[in-house]
Length: 441
Image (cartoon, rainbow, N blue to C red; front, side, top):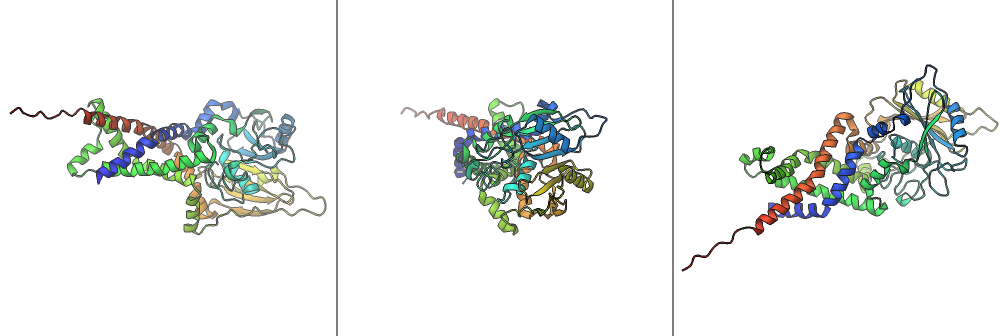
């Protein structure tokens, strides 16, 4: 029986080894995406706090309009940390589907991709305000999988075609100066994620990588079967690396011993990868948990018959800050339509995930709270799917799990290499077996 499993393990490993290398290499970079982004571009994310109070969002709006006269602001993200910049997202262009300064007053609000650390919150808020009728899975986030912002059922339809992604501006909250501007779809990490999720090959590439995740599950499963010792005396040998041995023995132990120790974590990563790749996983979770397949429609504002006062973004932000003053951030989504509501996503400090927000919807004219939903009130299926990305990347419990994930993925990168060497050595050994000499009569 072990011969059967060994052949499956070998053939699947040889067939998908290159893809596993690509997935692990890009995954190594994506684990610390947020930290690397901030380290590479500190001026983009951080400012020196001033002695004067922060400027209201109305003044920041004027500063952004001066810098981008044709741009239309779709959302703000304000951090409680006094050293952080305010992130302002502009709407994309309806005709081209490309983000840019052309997104004028008539442009439809876009779905920001995950090129920087705030993409998952922005995508979530915009899904709920605009195209949130389609149920979106995680990631942040990780965007890109079917049923998410860029997949089937997203704003751009199948394959994410026609998505409107505008630029993101980083503004000094004390001076109103626009410090930097990026297009989330043109960042290095977005490109790495496109490779990680679909080899930059569109829906076909995403399907290939999804199938590769399933294949990887079989590789891990057969690997555990092959590792399992038939005799208790052999257990110690399977749990220790024999340091100081020949390079062939070290290669053998690195593949088998370290493979066993990391197998449970790699299984979790592969399972969440499958979950983010295929619609049927989300549909199954919804069915098992009796969760709705679609998000509820955002509430609508009542348009006054006569000219009435408009509830400002500053008023919505202040109302949210009164509810939870110590939150990590506040994402203010502006309404797109006269009947649209204004949404504020409040992310508590030390939240389980970036999606664990309390969402408050305000009437854009009267300021009345139309609906408020805490993370615990979200459907169970939605919360489970929201855990896929943070579990997949190791961000679920912060630095400890990120470091663990980084180490596991680094080891995962070596397994196709050590496995190929192990197979090659065994093949050469079989060819060099001495022939038995026939004694002369």
